[in-house]
Image (cartoon, rainbow, N blue to C red; front, side):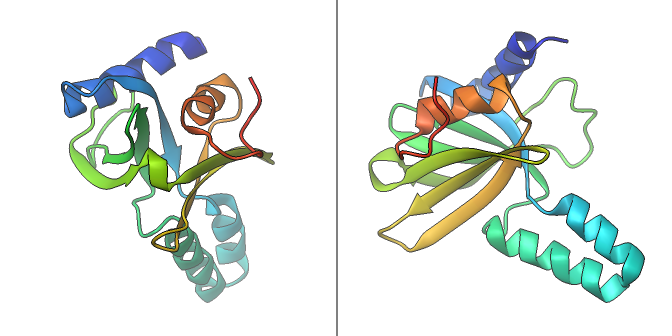
Length: 153
């Protein structure tokens, strides 16, 4: 399936949940560090667990996978069902909300995708997660991005 079909599925999932607030872009993301945690767990279970906990802390306590959506006014983190094939994404709960005027959203390419960072200078909050590399994540970062590191169009 091409990126435009996935993009429309993610956008629809967010739009169905948010209702009247028009969604500019949405993407399914995950906490970063999963591959490192898996590799470290082969060496030591304690090291693997520590890496998992570090990834959860960097993601602001958000679950392993979730949906990020941006509207004209806000950026949302939305929960996905625990048991889902992923073929038809569906948002089921609001996990976090940031006013766009108070946050900085940036993206940068990493080894296995694009790291998205949401920073709230007012509250001192920093959330880091990872989306698939390429246009699916780039379109979200372009729509939400406010910093110089934002992925260029």
